[in-house]
Length: 137
Image (tube, rainbow, N blue to C red; front, top):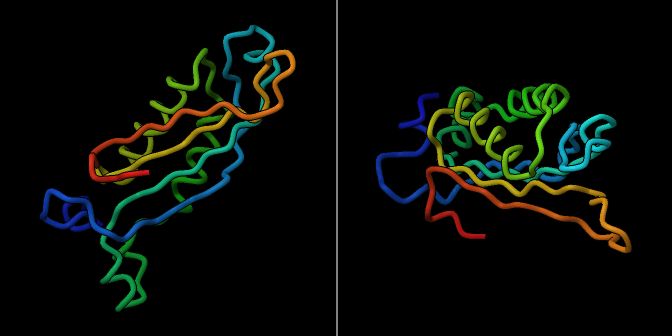
C-alpha cells in the first residue's frame, strides 16, 4: 500500500491505528561500556496511523500495513545496533519504520527495562514521533 493511500489525503492523520505493544528487543545500548558489551532488554510500543477502512471491508492485507514486517526488522536491527542513547535508538527505529511504510504518521515509546542507576527499580523511556503532530499521547 502506498503511504498516500495509507494516510489519506488530509493533513490530519486518520483515526485508525495499528498498535504494537510491549515488543521486547535485545540491544547493546547504553552510556556504560558494560551495557554496550553485554546488551540488555528494551520494550517498545509503536503506533502507525493508517486508514484501515478498506482492509476492514475487504479483508485484504494489501489495504493495510503488515506489522509482522516491522516486528521482524526491528528485532534484527536491535541485535546489531550499538549506541549510547535511547534517543538515538528511537531515531533508528523511526527511520526503519519509515523505510518500511513510507511517511505515515507514527509514534513510539522505547523503554529501558533496567537502567543501571543505584536504588532505581523503574523504567526509563523516550517518546518520539514522525509525520503526525496530531498523534497525541
